[in-house]
Length: 418
Image (cartoon, rainbow, N blue to C red; front, side, top):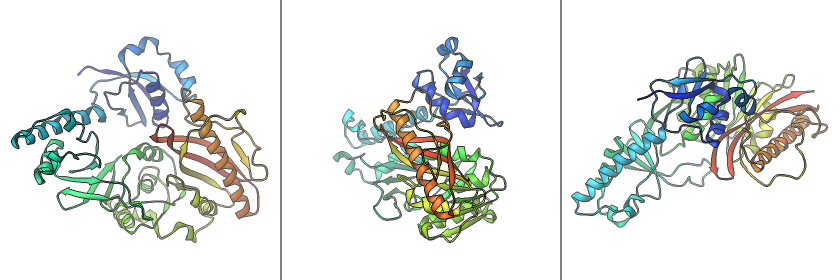
């Protein structure tokens, strides 16, 4: 396999550069990003873009202050999408053979009824609903699931439907092949063990977990208000070096997995697990950092987060939210630093990793959400402490998109008493 040109950047700027390169058609999606031990990554590029690539202009346009260079990946690895396409071909072949053995004919209509994506957790594959609906599949019983497992190279198979409407957002999962629903998933050398029929696992949050892993939280006390099975709690402990994490969770199944995962990763001694509704949490005035990793909105947790921050020094809130793009306001950009006594006052701050190619509507929606959130939290802090606070936007991180106009964002908000 020939070497592939790539843009080597610091990991914290990788998503920003990737979005920029993708928008300009110079990203090479066929290959995986190459990671290096010094905290940098190499983003594969199209060969024909090199003559027109001006690194100085690129750096100033996308992420001033970053460091970039052109390197060549000598042994490139196919991207997840390319591997899934190969797996899809294997799946189709296995299903075609099954149909032939039953005297049935393959058709494009049946191809459309085959899943095109799935989640893989060790030897278990989780497929979505809306597939294998044609009558011919119904007659094949267990043979169908055995053929699917053979095509996908797994031993266990499960299907996930819509998330249930209970307060724990329990996944509706049916085991199709195999009885044991406990799986092990490894991300960035962190092990997550959980029951796929009881707990959600979002693979799309990997970029945020990597970002947290890059933080320096030495000596810090962190509170994770929505810990789940430890999606963000564990990166704070394993990689970011937090002195102690208070992990809050009320789903009994997630709590069981969380405690197990803390032990698996050898960090139990630096974590206190709080069971139940975090709004009833009795802790206060101890956190250097609070993680609010709940979507579509973590707003109900804002008062709790404000009470948790250290009264004399303040700290940082990481606020998650699904934000919908809307038409831009006619007025110019407002300041991005807020004072509890004057929510519109203060010095302006950057919008973090917003690439220049983002539409005006997206930029405006994100900025407006960040400003409103900063002002509300400044007011909450003032009410709780009885003195004014300054809230400054440090960064807005795009985690993933749910629809063309709905985006999972994280606001890094610095909060300091005045």
